[in-house]
Length: 278
Image (cartoon, rainbow, N blue to C red):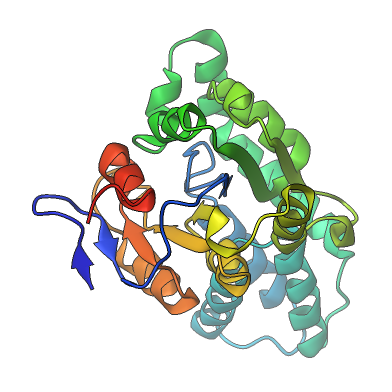
């Protein structure tokens, strides 16, 4: 592994990529482009721990915290409902009577909504600039891709109505000319793998003609599985600078070909992806 050039933070994990053929780009949303929902784990994990703690055969708090953290982390990048389905299973395992997974999802979304409402309000009234809640360089990267004639898609594990509204609030909607999609109440109707399959089929694309950018293992694994180029965004959402080591390890394990802290160096990244550098 190496950086693509002295002074850059773009880490190349695979030097055998076939570059210069990209025709479509797929983006994850939360943590990859958007910081609106930053801190969502601090809402979901305590909520789920409390549900398990109420079960007849519940272990101690530390054990439950470890269990919840593990499955929340493992399922990050998939639709939220998958974490709620797993919660229902864990409740059963401890002798409890689980609620419907959708009910768990709505409880979580209500709690998260309360936590992030000030960000949405700030975007709406102009007290917060959209750039403050976008991952550094994300808009510029999208503009760079579009200028090269590359079609851009957005696919998120967050519910589609929220994704559509938050993409608009961040001033990015028009840049996703390929479309924006997100989670559905009927979770079988959407997955990132389905989106990738549709992109490839609709445009007769193959392997490295697709690039994906994401901070979760799902979009990385799905892209690698079809021979695409996977760029892992190891964004530090709290400090908004540098690499999040935990994300980097997960993305590397998922097979990411390239790791970036954000997209501030989008020009060098695009030059590398298009075979113009290195």
